[in-house]
Structures are given as C-alpha cells and as structure tokens.
Amino acid sequence: MLRPTHRSLLAARPAVNDVARCCVPSVSADSSHTHALHTALLATALADGHDLDEACAYGDRVIVHAGTVRSRRVRRRIAELAQCLHPCRGVPVVGAFFDRHRDVLAAT
Image 1 (cartoon, rainbow, N blue to C red):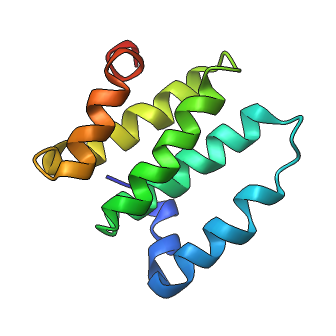
Image 2: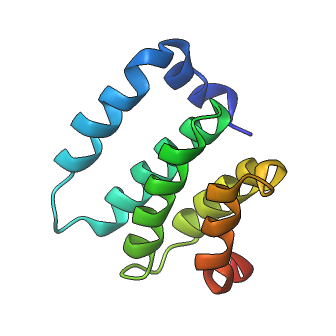
C-alpha cells in the first residue's frame, strides 16, 4: 500500500508509465541508490494501480539495483513492493516475480 504522499503518482494514472519512461532512466548511472529508490517507488505505484506486468518489470530492475547498494531504505521500498504485490501472487506474472526473487524478498 502506498503512503498518502505517494498517491499523487496515481492521480494522473495515464501519466504513470510516462513517468517511468522519462524520470527513472534519467537518474545518473553512478547513483544506483537513488535509482533503486525511485524505481521501487514507481513499481509500487504501478502495483497499487493494478498494472502488474509493469510493476513486476520495474520490480525486476529494482532488485538488480538493490544488489549494488546497501541501504535500509531500498530494502524497505522492496518490502513495500512485495507487500503490495502479495495479494496478487496468484496472477502468473506476480507469482513468477516472487519465484525469481524469493531469496531477496525473504531477506527484506
């Protein structure tokens, strides 16, 4: 579940994917921490908006970035994503996401 301050991402629902394509890639490559934080937030917003394919795709990206940083905030955002996706784990794309990242998700 998104925090109330993050709900504004969903207010303009059609624009969420535009934010994903425009803002997240613009984070500098040397800032894996920031990229992981923003990507996890975006994935959670997409999951909260029931765009499960995109949420899991961005979730995959955040797991990759999380492997390059040591951050409680990143782990917390991954846990929030997992919590948001958990009710949909019966959906194949979500189940596959949990299967692929079982070890990382168990550690959060």
